[in-house]
Image (cartoon, rainbow, N blue to C red):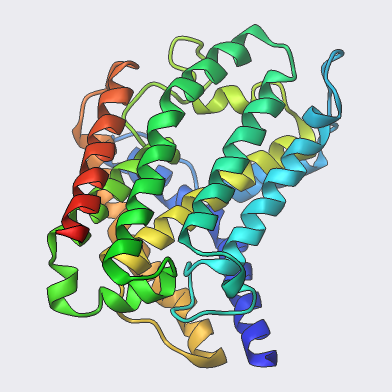
Length: 310
């Protein structure tokens, strides 16, 4: 019991503290590839520290949901990091409480609460971005659930740790259902983390999607929302790496859990390289093309579901 608690603490601490670093590395490399003066890899930490020190400004018509919603969403991300294989390859403390489908529903709950918090501000710009996110989200949530259903049918269980061990065998790893699920989840990760080559960064209303959710927030709530987005990127990316792409290399025990933090960094280099290739090799997509991207991810997830029962 004590060993499992220590392993869980190592996993959660690694996820919380290192998640901004991976985002900083991607942005740094993206600037270097684009031949631009790029920011430091530690810039996300500087931004979070600065926001934590700033005063919180609340819109006049906002309710308690706008104020406390960011704290709730960050707490949910912390809970998810206890139950899915984001660092350690075997079940840790609290893992039996949530399976793959439960994790997907928690991610959906966070997305729903973030939309409510943003809309509660009453800003027209926020309403524009929220409507876009809602129009894209139905395909994203369907893809996530369908992929996990396909995994459950292939392995006979909805436990993510069982799937990671299932993929260790070459015939299972190279099966069509696993390959379709791997590609579909990667396409979903690009959308969920704002890594699609779409003009969604910054405060331009013509391309504002993800940033609309944080448009009216400031101070500590804004810091928690940004930190939560880093953590979400890390959680989904680590699940894709550990369960689908590179299920090998995990170490057991407390010392193994510490080593797994470094091993995850090496694995993440593969995901960073793939993300960098996507972001710098493709021209910017028009906003309505996001639905085409998500439709492709959903179709692949359905193929994975079909091949898992054939």
